[in-house]
Image 1 (cartoon, rainbow, N blue to C red):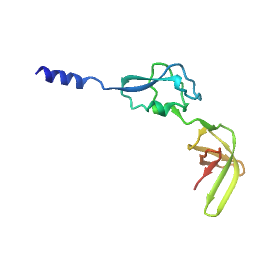
Image 2 (image 1 turned 90 degrees about the horizontal axis):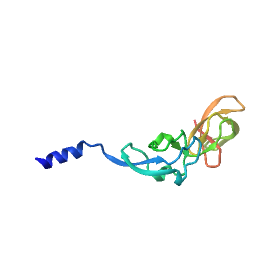
Image 3 (image 1 turned 180 degrees about the vertical axis):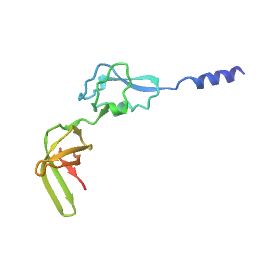
Image 4 (image 1 turned 180 degrees about the horizontal axis):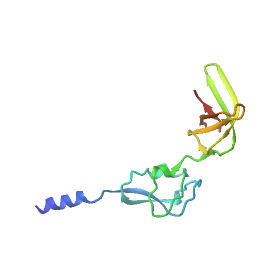
Length: 137
């Protein structure tokens, strides 16, 4: 009977898992360095792994002692808001290039809203590694 009570007590306790916390205040748009974060045991939050956070950009302010969540960081921005960027549309043998103005900050692989400077229309495209925006239908 004691064994059953002990097992039930352990099962009723909250599950502990590793979580990543900031060691210092990390401001938005700062790159997260290895010395900025620490792995601690705490309540499971479904947080990402330590390796996934290092080298990423903070999207919000990160405070010491608080767990870092998946939406708190992302790839470093390679395009700034209001930056003029090349827009590229390719379909079959057709290739159209023009310029646009980024309406938000974005990193490689993210989708970004861009205003086509020639037509003044807003379109969505994906940021490439070389800083261009690939536009699709």
